[in-house]
Length: 105
Image 1 (cartoon, rainbow, N blue to C red):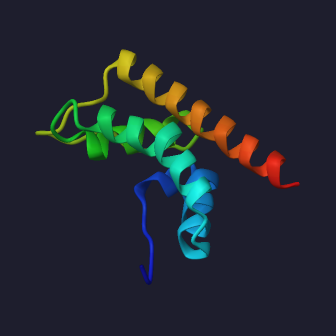
Image 2: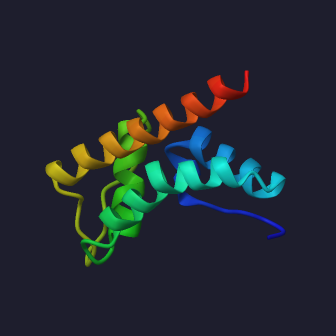
């Protein structure tokens, strides 16, 4: 992979950057950990509702304190329950990242 882009970078740049570094370095443990703890749960949540690829990124940006505009039709806003799940997924991803960093310090 020559380059890497992720909408996750908009709301969890620490996770996206760590995953990119792991891919570039061939660090399979970090890749597996971040996939299991963050990316796969995020993808599963994203796949629940058509258009959530956009809606959840905007919700994540709002959770990160960024001002973003509303979702435009025909897409729908993420439900409060799904936003809470997103917040928990981000927390879980950051906790996994922290554990990885501590184990390598």
